[in-house]
Length: 106
Image: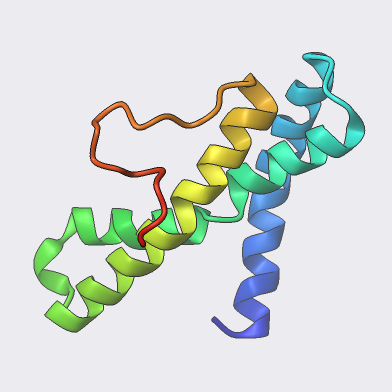
């Protein structure tokens, strides 16, 4: 993504970020926690956009493009959601499916 695209994306995300931040402050979170909540909820939206684009037209991605998009999404998004869940909702991540999702590989 070039610098102009990144700036445009930031401008589009700012109202979303500000609304989440305001909601966090209303819940009684500190300014830092509100900042972090907003950040963790918007930083991965470009990954969501890529996944949504794939969902709209699965055949438009080559196998390599699909693999890259999925790896990027799966590595980037869950950590942000886990952080936001802990900060905003005081809900730590658990492995509800029992697949070792929160265990480090040896």
